[in-house]
Amino acid sequence: MRIALDINAYVDLCRNETRVTEVVRAAEKIYLPWVVAGELRAGFLLGSRGAENHRMLLKFINSARVELLYPDDQTTHHYARIFTQLRRQGTPIPANDIWIAVIVLQHNLELCTRDEHFAALPQLTLC
Image (cartoon, rainbow, N blue to C red; front, side, top):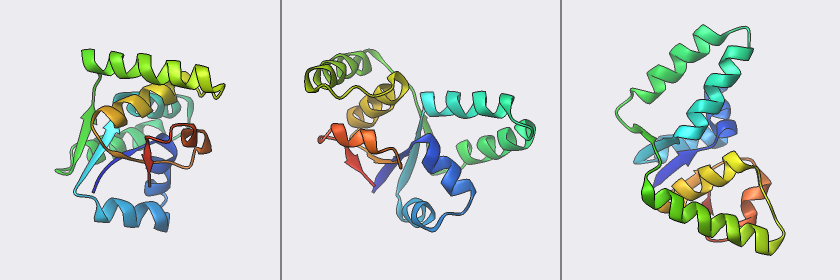
């Protein structure tokens, strides 16, 4: 299983939440979309434990099974299709979450998240 973590799944992992911990342990490879890394770092700057949280994130990113996912030209094509699909369905989701969804779809991953609005994308596999 190859998974991508949404921000809430990363936070749950850091809190040793059983569901996420078990999924991560079972995963062959773990991906962190670039936008999730950005959201986390923004939160760290606003919080009181920013340096500690950033060190934990770097340790996680540098582990052998983890890879940061960055967009490329193909990602923009996926974005256009998903944005259009959501608009036509009348089920918009936050822009950052569209980017997360499209990069997960592009790389054929399962998305580990608690956000229910991702269910508006039936082609997205959630864990």
